[in-house]
Length: 311
View 1: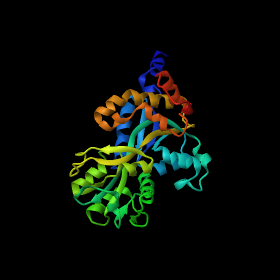
View 2 (view 1 turned 90 degrees about the vertical axis):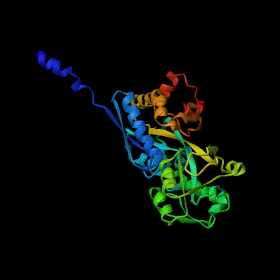
View 3 (view 1 turned 45 degrees about the vertical axis):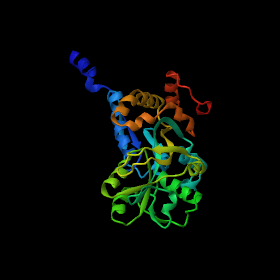
View 4 (view 1 turned 90 degrees about the horizontal axis):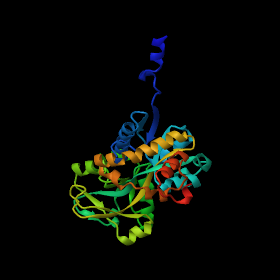
């Protein structure tokens, strides 16, 4: 009898860890790397009670689309503009029932997306007009593909660039081999695929004017000189906040523990990779959906001021 009691109370019979799928981006990108870093931080911060499994993705469009099929233990990343399009049934979500996406709820910000227009050549920086007549890979299913197409329309380049329909994972090799002249990617800097490209061939980064940045309606972002090999001057570009999101199907306690653990581990994450230092609670003001009730509980407990629209 005593042996049975001892067995029932042993650590081996403790509750199993909660396994959560985390879907962010393609392997080789900064956001896929962030997924691995976040998974380690969540596991360490929860003493193994929460296990985040980072799953490769084609990008934010796919992440949002999978809301229609995933259950409660699903966390994904996406920028506000794409979430808004999903809720309105526009852009890549045209023809989809917006009600499928009404279940999306916010947890916490992750490092923002920075637009990179990468062109072959050793000019250092060049204006966006330099892309006219070029063969440009946008990367299907990504936030950057939609943004780049929008910028080409804004700046009179629509129809004046030849678009390559391929995955962004092929960009570095394609640029090296001369199959494309340029590609566009959006990620926190320094982004691994741009670093890889710069190690293979000389690159030029497109730098926007302040007036062009203003016309995009996006946040002005400076990539400091020296961030990438051969680019000594600063690059003026744009960025967009990105969020870790779940759905109303996630258990409130799981959402609370994920959010709490993230913020408690942020300092350690920043020591590992400086891009995590750009994450602040102020970014939550850009969230186009409500916070998950579990995440909201954490923010209230931590006395973090929030816009009323998120409640």
